[in-house]
Length: 220
Image (cartoon, rainbow, N blue to C red):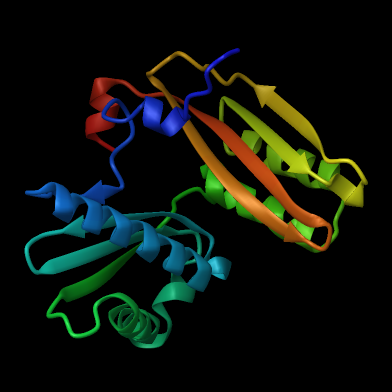
């Protein structure tokens, strides 16, 4: 049986960066920071569900934590005159850093092309499924948007009780090329869940954004 490797983990340090930017001096600190990062990401993704968040990077120093959020709708997070960020920082302090002296800040960056972000595409499909729209139509429209954004290939897989069927099944549609072993290929991969009345539907999205060479990687 074939071994499935996560495309992002497979290309770490080649054309993908780590999402936790910090160093732990002991095993205890490593476990503590890692657990904290997972909980912070889960909390933010739930709180910013409608902001089309692509990724969350967490940078740590001795007494400072900087959270970098990449989103297709940065205005939704920032709010009027930065009120949204201030409110989010207060909630994070109350939830994770109560009674601790931590310099916490949030940076929000806009995604240049949301159609080339696998997570944003997955969130759009999940929203369509939760609104009971036909899943094949949603997938085909998403594939067309991705290919119009000059991607070299896209593959989308749905698994679950599609259209409320009695038996769960898997449907896959693809267009273009999605190389599995080429490390230079910039494959953006995400898993998203759609919570429907018939249960959870899993959505996997692969987008091939072309090959990245050394000189291109330095300019990213």
